[in-house]
Length: 319
Image 1 (cartoon, rainbow, N blue to C red):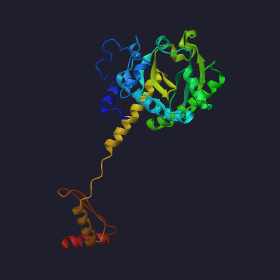
Image 2 (cartoon, rainbow, N blue to C red):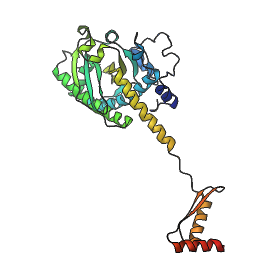
Image 3 (cartoon, helix red, strand yellow):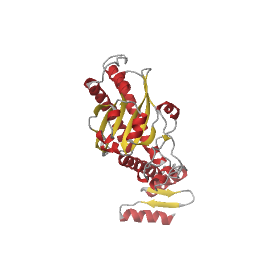
Image 4 (cartoon, one colour):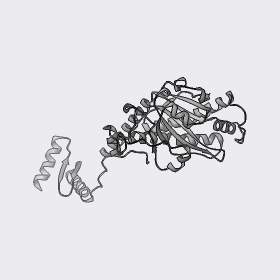
């Protein structure tokens, strides 16, 4: 995607329509892709739907495209920041946008893992959660502390959680800056809070965050750090927050389109008309402007006193 939705996509979103033939058509939802297939989606957002959700919880393909576009831009900035922290090549691929429930999350992700909650304090109202595998956190924190990324034995402790919170603070701070530019409003976040959870022991997602008790938006990224990490990270949004984000994004896109449409290109100067203006100004002794073209327009002659007007009149009458 090039950073802007097409006019057709914007119109469809505003009208509550779906540009695809599959959305809300009664067809069976696609099976969500796992992380091994994410590498084949570098040039397109994959739009899966979690099973059995109500109509009010569904997202159209256009909404998923918008969420994916925002997430892609944000995570691109985060990858650059992570590179500066670990001094290793970092690649985070195009996002895969799906709907999920706590059950589908448990079925598709490793346990235990680290949940990092990020709350927006300005510009956006809501919370999102990053989910990283325990092994990936150990690699990142080992690199941050000067290791080679192979010291991953032992349990994950407070030192690891503190380090990954700092890494996420910088990464999501960079993402917030990118969002500020994209949405044309100042966006700030609170310091992230990191917690280690054994998902087999968490029966209800509400124990972690209230919105995880229902259907939510799951954005999956394939993350590679040199040859040390080739894994999947997830970003989780409440559906109402995701829709508000889409609305803000679309309104910004619409405003940009309107601005481009209203801004007419300046007409190149007509050398013949400019020459005529100069001749009239010299002859009449005052400012003269010609508006229009060679075939049609108007001549504006300025004067600043009654005597000046009479002088202009005499010249025009005589000639």
